[in-house]
Length: 302
Image 1 (spheres, rainbow, N blue to C red):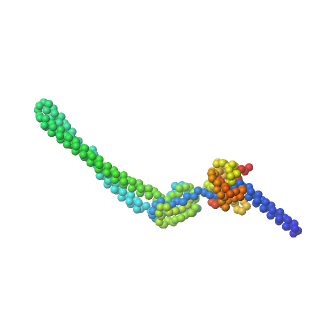
Image 2: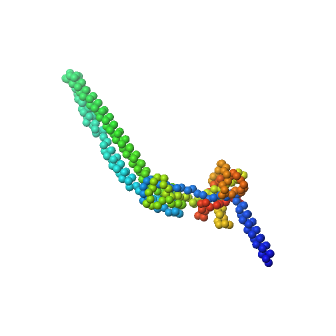
Image 3: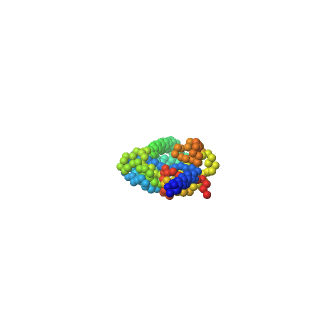
């Protein structure tokens, strides 16, 4: 009985080892699942007045998750708005400012016509006509000088207004940057700050990633390059425990155009291959796949 028992155990162990070896050989390449991660940093300076972010939280692209104190920015913007209003109130209305000069010139021109008629009838002297003509020229020169002065003053005011408006635009941009939002739809992976802390531009606030779309970064040998092309459908397996694997539909989205040395943590079909090519395979995640998890891929599975 002892010999029979030992024989059965030996056969069972042999079958298990054979099954494991067979299962390990049922893939063309292996790699690690990864996803696009984005570290969101502060763009403004001030206290984090609100920061509603927790690790594992699902966020939408553009969703406001908090803001930095903007009181001082708002007060400065009010000051600039008042300054802009005061500057614009100094702007001169050229038409109103020179209206009296134009009226005087028109009156003298009519007077000149009347005296010219009298001169032709020999009822007045040429000197009187010349005097009126001289007065018209003086007023015309005065009109031109006044217009130039008004235009120069208004141009200066315009430059001041443009400068104030540019400052207000910068403030408005800073106020917008004080709002903290997620650049992508995904899940918060890491939280680096807390409400009430002081933020400065570049300070990391949280890390977010779209874990609904994962990529398996695998490595293939030069001989396998002919079996793959961009857009090709493949079968991906994610490790599920020590013996089980879960199957997913995958699609090749990137193939490296340059070989590299085989990473120590990655196996290829030919483990002795020194140079390999990296490939990325897109996989829709059902929630089971995690970042850093090992996965395997078959190029042609019937």
